Every structure is written in structure tokens, then in C-alpha cells.
Figure (cartoon, rainbow, N blue to C red):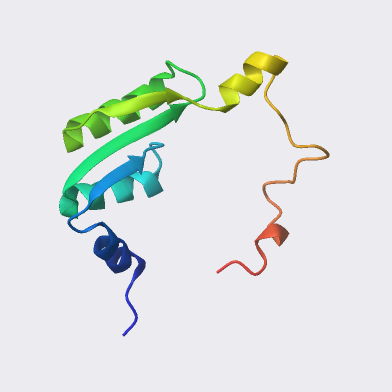
Length: 108
């Protein structure tokens, strides 16, 4: 029988020191949760694009309380680009319509 993604993640994390890049999204939250359950020592960090956003601060505070750890905050590398250029880089050309699902062809 084939192992599920969660079983593979647990096997990879079990008994190890783990560093989690925490964004506050569901994917990083699941990895943080699994790591705290089966990892030996867990540390987490986040890359802040805009410091002080209440929604981000709440997500980080919740995770720190829930998992009894400190999430280290580092400036996102795009802040350096903004500091040099005075703006963030945007994609060239026209942005795709979010309702258009053609870009998902071939994705499982």
C-alpha cells in the first residue's frame, strides 16, 4: 500500500530537529503541527513583507501560544527590492483572470 503525504511527512520529521517556515497559511500550519507532534526540537520563522499587519500578527501570536514557541520574524527579501527601486516588482504583461482555470490543466 502507498503511504499518504501525511505518513511520509511524519516519517521524515520523526525524531528530528525541524525548522519550519511559517506563513500562517494552512500548509505551514499543518507542517508546524506535525513537527510539534513528532519532532525532537522545533523552531519556526516567518518572512515579513509588511511588518505590523494585524492579521499576520494575530496568526503568529496564535501559533506561538498554541505550540509554545517563538516564531522568529525576518524581513522578506522583497523589502530590499522595494528599498532600492521604490516599488515591488510586478509581473510583465497582463495578469491572468483568476476565474480562468485553463492554467490548471495537467495539475493533479
